[in-house]
Length: 113
Length: 112
Image (cartoon, rainbow over all chains, first blue to last red; front, side, top):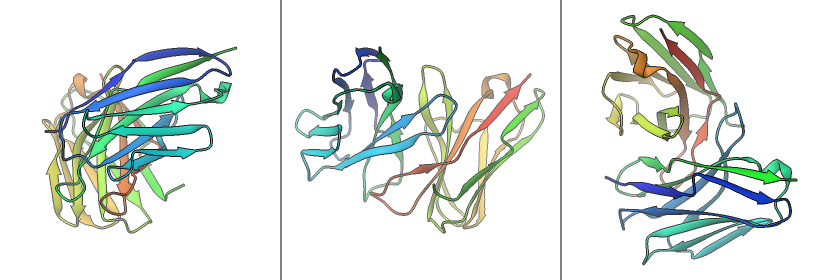
């Protein structure tokens, strides 16, 4: 089955700098890749998603890139702010085959003042 | 926020007792999921449902069963709880394939 690896497990960046979180997936048929943010004690919430027919997607300070050949995708956060501190999860699924969404183990992002 | 309610929100019970967690949605979404979240493991899929009475196993299904007798409710049962099942359990719903999941607030389950 699908396996999603996420790196790094912990990331600390200075406020105002950029943060990058990387994920790889194992099944080349995967075609839908959401990213979730989870604040302490809260539910995971979708922040951005990308489908395999698109190489990049942006939403204000957040962007996701997808490299299907290498089977990896990345989350980019620019001009980081204190409220970006959270745990971020990537995930992958195969639309049209089954209905599972498999998550990476998460990255804890610390924004340093 | 999507209309998802998990109950109970917190539960403490003893090893060997049966436990049932409930996920209730008001969105009429087809797909429902149960995940467990543990430090260092992220979100791991236990079981999911793609329609009434249609369910399938996830990554960590041993020791868990599910039932979905109507669209709005998805039940997760631990037949005989063990300490290794102490975790935070999240329910999620999804309208269709290729659509994002929306999560409930979670149930914190402690098995002593």
